[in-house]
Amino acid sequence: MRIVIDGKKVVLDGCQVETKECGEKMLTELYRRYVGDYPKFFKMDTLSKLGFIASELLLQREASLRGVERFVPSEERGVIMGNRSASIVNDREYEKTIQKGDYYPSPALFVYTLPNIVTGEIAIRNKFYGESGFYVVEDKETLMEIVRSSSMKAGIVGWVECRGRNDFEADVELI
Image (tube, rainbow, N blue to C red; front, side, top):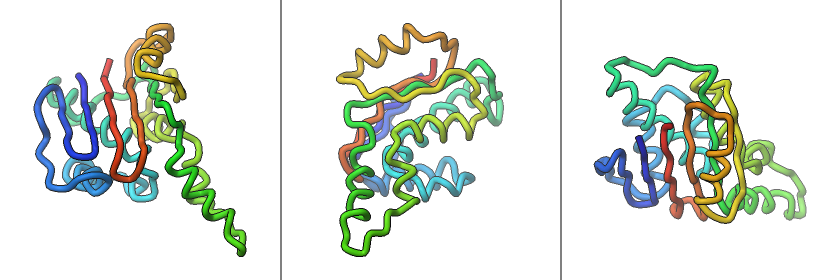
């Protein structure tokens, strides 16, 4: 199973998912329509929202194909994701809070200056206890080499790149 998301469309297993919004508003639209029960979503940065929505739609698809309401958590499942720019969009937002004359760093922004927060959110939400990691690499092929060399037997893997609140891409698979 595979999902591809960019700022304008969502394609799940080759079928386009209908959306009215674009960019980060599209991610919120998808959350409200398909998830709705994880309030931490609204505190997440765009990178985390992107990975979270991609994983939720994949896992819901898996559950529907198996004829169950929700997938079964597994100690063997893990999450491996990566991109080229880490959490640069949120890093820049955080930097603004520490450059002001009235220096007050934002703890809410600081937590998302780590790109591995997206894999942690997915693992915690779904009770995945297997391998988890976020890799900053040059391209998708390098990331997939890491996945192939890992000990992970099943889970969510993919590329989640965020260049701005409305400029992002995800190419994520359930393996």
